[in-house]
Image 1 (tube, helix red, strand yellow):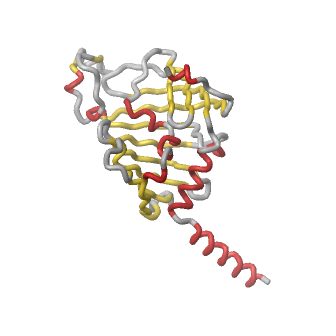
Image 2 (cartoon, one colour):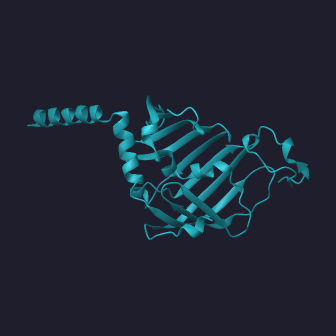
Image 3 (tube, helix red, strand yellow):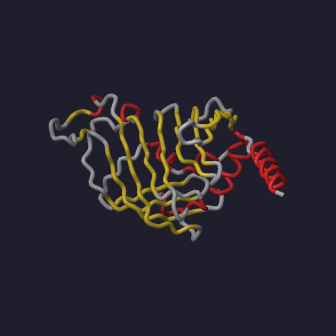
Length: 229
């Protein structure tokens, strides 16, 4: 009996492994994200950019399919790059038919499945997206997106009670400040206080990081278009 059970388990493992093609993995991730038509989330945002002083602030984040995103910050300071729509994973899958999917195997330390999405459209803003996926939960734990105009952005997600919707409890959004196009003439005070009123074009090789920790989501209750204007 034990041998029969062992053979059955091995057979199921083999069948499961064969079933997990790149397309299947992405399909499951997308199916989870597709449960969300819209949401309003409440959280706290920590901005860590060398040239701006910004306190930890309460934020409300609004999303609506297919790619509308708005972050309202109570402090009025919100240094989010133009590519901030990438902070919402749903945006990666607006048109999966427009991507070639490349299987890169698994990350040694985490066992996360690595899949690259390469846009078929040569004129697409996104050049390449690399996803690190927990196959057992169909959740994207990390992503790296390279764009033509706004540099490369990295996301790292932690999940909790909203995991069934593919919504993270915490998102860490990292970007290169040198790739972010600041408005001309804008100056900032540096965090360390050693330099002040530095011109924006002097910023070189700096990393910016925005962390959003969510306390709650209101999902699929309807978000009016007026919120995004």
